[in-house]
Length: 377
Image (cartoon, rainbow, N blue to C red):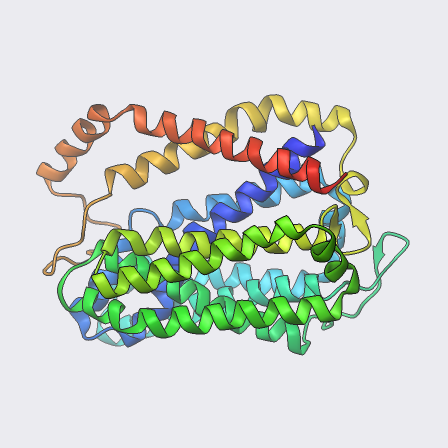
C-alpha cells in the first residue's frame, strides 16, 4: 500500500508539472507575443484547461498530507514562505486571467502584468523549492531546524531559473500545436533557444548533483541501467530538433513531456528510497497502514480515476486548434450555439477515450510502483 501511494504522489506531481507547466509557460511567453491578436490566441489556447490543470497540485498536496504526514510537516515547515508566495501567485494569475477582459484599456494592462508576473513567480518558486529540497534539508530528530530563508541558496535559485526555461519550452510546444499564423511562427522561433538552454541546464544540474552527493554517484555507478532516464531525455531532445526542422507540430509537445518525465525519473532514481534526501525514506515517512488503506477506498479508487477521466475528457473535447482570427473572450461569455451543441456529440462519439486514459494512468502508476519496489530494495 505504501508503494501505491508513493506511485500516486509521483503521478500527481508529474501530471501537474506537465499540464500546469505548459500553461504557466504560455503566461511567460505572453509579453513577447507579436501583437494583441497573438496574445489573445495564447490565452484562448489555454482557457479551457488552465484551472483544471491545477487540480493535480491539490491532489498531490492531499496525497502528501494523508499518506506521508511526516514529509508533509517537514515540507511545510521548510517552505512555508515559498509555498505562500506560490499560492498568491497562482491566485493572482487566475484572477488576472478572467478580469483582463472585464476591464478598460488601462486596467487591462494591469491585469496583464498580474498574469505574467504570477506565471513567472509561481514557476520560479516551484523550481527554487525543488532545488532547495535536493540540496539537503537541515533536519534533526525528524524536524526541520533551518531558518525561514534557507532556501535562498545558489543551487535553488538556479533551479528556479531552469524551471522557467522548462515551462516556457513546454508552453511554446503547446502553442505550436494549438495555434496558427503569426502566433505559431512566434513559438517556432523561440523553441530552439528554450530547448537548448533547458537541456544544457539539466545536464549541468545532473553533473553538479553527482559531485555534491557521493551517495548519488555511488547509486548511478552501481546501477548503470538508470542511465535510461537521461538517455530518454536526450532522445526526446533530438525529437524536438527534428520536429522543429520538419515542422511536425504534434510531435513537439510529447517530446517536451518526455524530457520532463526523464528529468523527473532521474531525480527520483537518484534519491530513492529517500523522500527527504538522505534523511527520511518512503517507509519512514508513510502513514500507518490502516490510514493508507482507508484512503485507498476513497481517494485511490474514486478520486484519482475520476480526475484522470475528466482531465482526458477536457483535453479531448478541446483538442482542436485556435484559429488565426480567434481570441479569448473572457470567462463570462457563453460559447456559440454551434460549439455548445457540438461538444456533447463529440464527447458521445468518443466516450471511451476518458476511460481508456484512466486505465492507462493506472497502468503507468503500477509501473511506477514496480520501479519503486526495485529501487528501494
